[in-house]
Image (tube, rainbow, N blue to C red; front, side, top):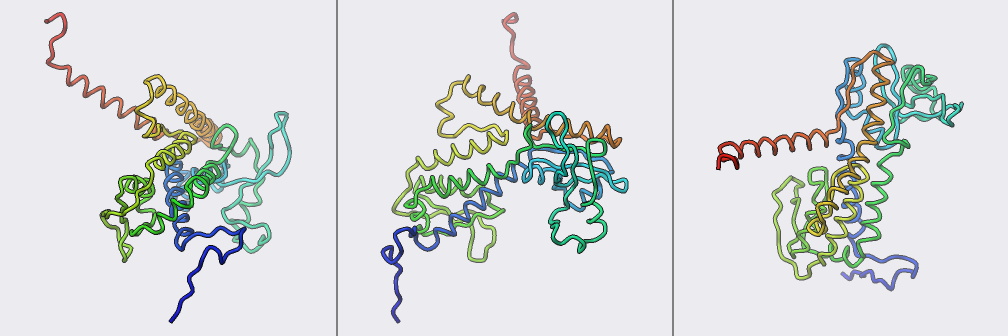
Length: 327
């Protein structure tokens, strides 16, 4: 039995030829990085919800409001049958003296105006609500109500499709290993680059798809370590945009203390901008609906806790040591 081998010269000149597996590899890496960064974005903020939010929490499986802020950049809070709900919104027209829309309506997830009349009465009732600043509160992801998902997707696409060369991806496709980025190993893409830089590609899944302890095996052609630097810089651009502290590993040792602090201040201001939008909305919700909702920055709580632990350790190490006066 003969089998025809696809050759690059069999394709048209305006087509891009790549070996089998490269396209899927691109998609796997994109999927894993997308889950990683979007998961971080949604986990940045913690809420203490009142009992009025119990229906919303159960029906959304505790993904609201951050899932809407990630995807849409804003959402609207409103009360219905003594329960608070949060949904995406659409503007109905009407502009105030500051050029902002003054009327809007919530949009149930998956609602399609062309199928109006086929949904349950509760869904139709919510979609037909006419809301404004007197009976609802709009929560924004940042000052401009921009979503994070578009930036994350664009940066990942730029990294995988345009920054990593076709030769690098061909090498990945030809290497003797199994590589699949899943929700269980979302950081494997970066670990994989580290492994290849040291000529040790990693096997992350077995034939049965079960979770395994990563193992390694040698190959003959390593990848240039500068690939890791490119990956680091792309990752830090995404994390800085979200408000996560980040300095590229390959650059960290070259920075002065002032540069590190300056970078941290820039990221802290970005995070504070996003926190203030959530906090202002929460305050208005509490005032309008008589609730006691609260929002916290998970990162700042962690950093404060870490700093407190370090101070306690320093204080403990100082106990028993002679002071200069005692000496």
